[in-house]
Length: 310
Image 1: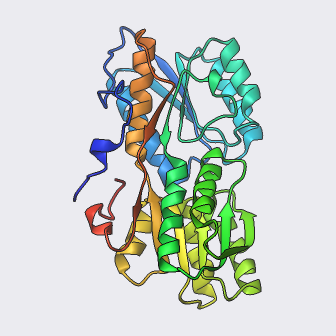
Image 2: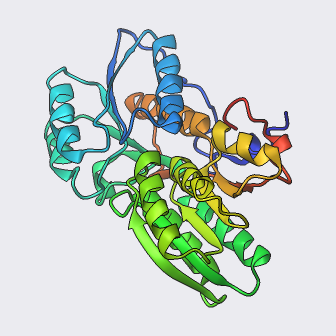
């Protein structure tokens, strides 16, 4: 399997190594939270972070708020009292998480953000995440090529998730002025079941749509289930992640899934952990470390395989 993305994933030269360079003199304790611990993307990130941290004889304590910032805040509070050496943060809500960030700052716990930004990035020592704007942009560019005359489209986004907002902005900018009309834009909360229900209603009201953009792959899969349920054909469905499930659909060659703006959760995890250890060792780190995103379609899915993440 060709993994051409790995050589270009970490765009900042300061992260020269992918694995942590420091070995703890005594065990360190790190907190971890993401918006949805059941999402395969975040499962992969957590598992890889845990592997790297435990290799150093340290501990990773993970909490899952299930896409509810009102649960994420007290979960972070519970982590703070456990005398953390550092915190890995992926917020449910970029603005809503700030009370927890205030408490982390007051406790002098360094925070490395990953995948999704918070509203005030000065609270984090650094950030590792995909170029989410480009992940949406490449999907929009592909849609323009396939539908040069434009048409009606549906957008299933998640406005409280900054990463999805950036993807949606990239997608919308790519199709701007190309003859497309958004007939439905709904908050799918990054969830397959929610997306399926929304897509069913929107497709019933708009049977002539040409494409659906989902802010992540679970959203796209929900839209796919809705389209299949209504026996619709010819729709182009886009997601963002490059998950094994989406790549398996693309490999079929006849799926309604047209493409996914792919990212690498493995590299995000490795980069975030490396940043944390370097910072704790007193090394200078950059404010952010962007990770490359790119389009996977049926034409190139064989280069990345369907049995895992790129």
